[in-house]
Image (cartoon, helix red, strand yellow):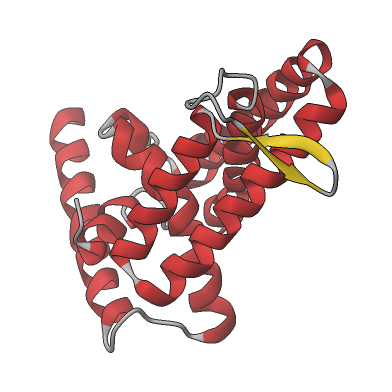
Length: 194
């Protein structure tokens, strides 16, 4: 669970097609954002709940905050540098979704969440079905797929844009494991067909 190379290899084996990866880069973070938007309407975890920000009470320590904290701590535990960036992005999503939820109210926010989730999930399933030609990782490991998806796409973006690696040789080792997993999956698929 805390081995970044294993987690990244598992997720990467389901996301090898460049178009599928691009679709995930576009749609994964909005899924997290809108999930936090919905969680914004959960009750406070503590009696002293709101944090005042610019005179408006919209940051509440509720299940949205708790989810954000879990994601942030998990990402930092996997990799200090990229994990800290991911944690910062998670807290930005929480603050932004809290602000948006405060402005929209539940009556409109749930409709925004529903429309966004439908669009984003449809885009990802198209990426898997049409381009990757493999079922999503969430069908094999639901918790891991939901937890790793935002971090995975961030690491992909950092690797492609800046050549970032959590440690020397990380990308080469992960790619070798991904290639081996894809070969094994294709062999298994071919055996089932014949």
